[in-house]
Structures are given as structure tokens and as C-alpha cells.
Image (tube, rainbow, N blue to C red):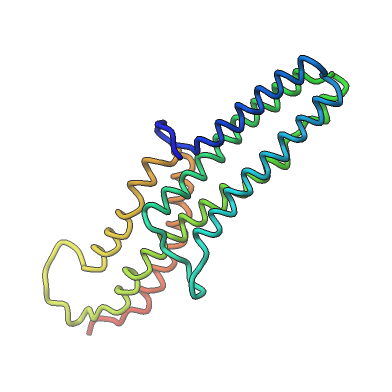
Length: 215
């Protein structure tokens, strides 16, 4: 389920934080001591479970087949991007929630309000989603890159603006990059591109060195 924002998130994450907000308001009106502190801990436990569920979905979706990384479909890549956005939203909203709880709880208990476990879960899920997207793009590029090493350059007679393997690489990139660029926040998209480039360039260089010289 997605909303209409530029970088869509799962609608369920908004529902989770709305429930937290209402519960916090009701509890703080009655008790700002140990009861509120326990409620804050319950919030964190629920967040960890929610985010770990997203993490598990990414792992299941991107599970390698036959020992090799799997190229995700465009729909699957959109699902993974949705996880990135949802976790990013959760991180921002969680900071606000923590601040609200710390203001509401008794001063003596403020230092016990910490959402470090939830933050770790969010970071782990985002990293897994980014890795899954990078692996998917690289899997799509692999066939195109392999065609480079199989090309018999001495027998190439056709004249054109670029080689056929370049068209294959361009096609593989076009299948994923424009959609992900539109869906991911700029910092996450930039990081994804860095991951892909860091993996592709050494692979491309190795294939070039393996190519036979033109005699």
C-alpha cells in the first residue's frame, strides 16, 4: 500500500505512529512515571518488530537462486524501494516520538527513554534493501558485461556509434534506474549508484583485460 507522496511509504507505518501518538496522549494524562516509561519501551518493541518484518520481506524477495544473485522485476524493485522509504520515514518519525516521550515523562526517567534498538533495526533494514537493489541491477548487467568478453573484435565489421554490448548495458540500466531515481530520496539513490558503480567498474576492467587483442 502506498500514499501519493513523491517518495511513497507503506500506509501501515503512518497507522502505527498514529496509534502511538494516541496511546501516549492517553497515558500521559494519567501517569508520567513508570507506566509511561513502560509504554515507551512497548513502542520501541513494536517498531523493532515492524521494521524486522520489512527486513524479512526484502530477504525473502531477493533470496539468491542457484547460488547467484537474482534480478528483481520492476515491481519487486518498487517493493524494495518502498521498504527504504518506509524505514526512512520511521526513523524521522521515531526521533519525533522519542522527543515527545522525553518531554512528557518524569524528569528522573528521561535518560531511560532511548530508541537505539529501533534505530539499529531501521539501519539494518535500509542496508539490506539497498544491497538487494544493487544486486538486482548488477545481475541484470552481468549478461551484458559477459557479452563483452565473448565478442570477437577482429571479426567486427559493422560501423556504428557504439558496440552491441553497450546497448545491452544501457538497456539493463534503463530497466531499473529511472524508476528507482523517481522513487528513492536523493541520498539513498546516490548511495545505490555508488554501490553499483563500485562493483561494475572492477568487473568491466577485468573483462576488458580478458578480451583478446585485435590482430
